[in-house]
Length: 543
Ligand code: C2O
Ligand code: CU
Image (cartoon, rainbow, N blue to C red):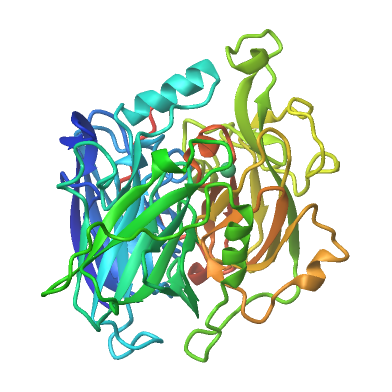
């Protein structure tokens, strides 16, 4: 295995989009940020230098970091923020990941502008489980805010209401030619007729799942979240914030230009026409130019069935080289309700709707971020940082997906973690609820990939639902959308000791508390215990 070194300089940089200029935090002055390229099993050291104005952390999304939570990055979970004018070197240890992952800031909303791709090629002397593509391209889906993103979330939290939505989605940093002042800069993917391209698509959007497609070209999905899958040939993909998809596209059409489009699945927000970002697939050489490129037909913004049908197609490769290791018997079973609800303010102190404030919760606990990181508190036995009592089931059972009044269930605040024994065979059932505006929730777990063994609509039934489980070739992912008014079951072996954040990857839900932490205990030996901490960790101001 090889070792690579990168320098990431966080700094304010001026960018112009949608006819106006703003200063925003970037890595090395680029948006999206730099790509990290490795082979399977390599190690990377990234020297993160913060030349910005506030403390930030960086997370390597989907990298399992065996026994190495010290470099995982979520703010005040595994480290405190890197103060301005200081640096922190993070060690990123790759193990079995292969395909596409990404990195992003993990402090408040700074990931809107601070993110980039991680590309993991097959180990030397091995190859893809599909014919080698002619070339590859990274496609990062993002979101552009004319305003300052940190101010947007801070204002929303102060008033208890919804944060402002962005002004455009972006493809490789560009909103595309449907927007003012954006025609010239529209991203172009240049292709040669007859060749097959591997697109590494990353959803770095803050708050919306996306439908993505290319006019007249079918997509063959061959991987997701740094693992291969059985090929899916489709006209569109559905990708949640946090997910990646590796897609093969063959340039086999007659004209010179075709639209590449991303548009949200969003049942409560802005309609289709205001939110479509475009790029152009352009054939090189002498081709007939259409009067205007054709547009892909994508599911409409509220097409819930299109989301679920796509997710159900995902299957692990389950080959000799890429085996499935899903636990068949479970030693730790957890049931978690996922809700967007309102926090009760007894003295009417919060200015949100009905004197309440918007909030989000897991098992009715709205997560409160501590001021000292939980990893340090766990490792050094510091008191009063967290409590060890995240509930393994909701406080009471009701018709979760039935007719539930918006304000009937108020969450409580807490920094509650769930402790799991080393090598536990874990099952988590996520149950969506109809409290508030029911939505899909892309749940993400740090430190692991997990198998999605079951998915269904309505309430989970512990007698009948497990009968539908796929234990043969379930997809292995790190982020998956828990369906609106439905449930989803995941399994994994807790073989990675550490402190691992688990949260919804819709940023407004995470800000409202749809988070918790899994602490996986050490096994009996050094090789099954958390590695020793690095010599330097960023200081916590209050510790
Ligand atoms: Cu993409 Cu907690 O992260
Ligand atoms: Cu959510």
